[in-house]
Amino acid sequence: DTGVSQDPRHKITKRGQNVTFRCDPISEHNRLYWYRQTLGQGPEFLTYFQNEAQLEKSRLLSDRFSAERPKGSFSTLEIQRTEQGDSAMYLCASSSGLAANTGELFFGEGSRLTVL
Amino acid sequence: AQSVTQLGSHVSVSEGALVLLRCNYSSSVPPYLFWYVQYPNQGLQLLLKYTSAATLVKGINDFEAEFKKSETSFHLTKPSAHMSDAAEYFCAVRDSSASKIIFGSGTRLSIRP
Image (tube, each protein chain N blue to C red):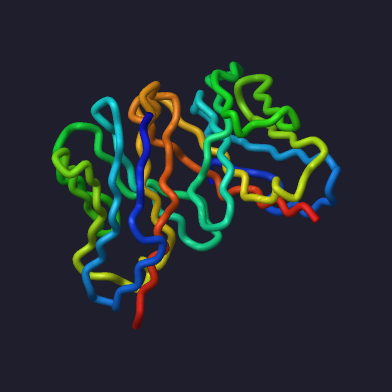
């Protein structure tokens, strides 16, 4: 399968712990996005990369959140000192070329975080 | 700023009936609009997109949407619902900087046998 893959699919952690999610985009895609989705809501933009450069960060992304894409391939999203309000599905998407120009995104299945 | 509003968080139709999911947009520039579908335990998939070409856009699984500038609408329709259409549907718009897309809150579609 050559789609976007995310790991882990589910993570349960205790409040105050750090968690890290990984996203492997479609191999030829140079844009990579992170979104967050809570129950009953649509995905909310968090941040995006063009190659290894992080070009935009949402105000939703507090100082406890950090994302990297060190070699322009896979990306990680780390949440430090987790809070119960961080419980959500974290979605990764990628895009490239004409699809990127129109805004079309290819999504992974998401990583669900539960903070106890 | 670009935004979309989906009217109705939950729509229920009978199998074989018309599906109509409503979306209105707000955009300061000619919009690029999308409908995405999320089946249970799966990632979001693009259903169809409007990129300023034909105003009637056809997508997968017999879904289509019509861009109406005068009504600032981009409603999704399907002539005959199938049980497999049960899912969450999201309307979305590309933001003015073309850096990302902005999603609506979603409409859950249920199909009655």
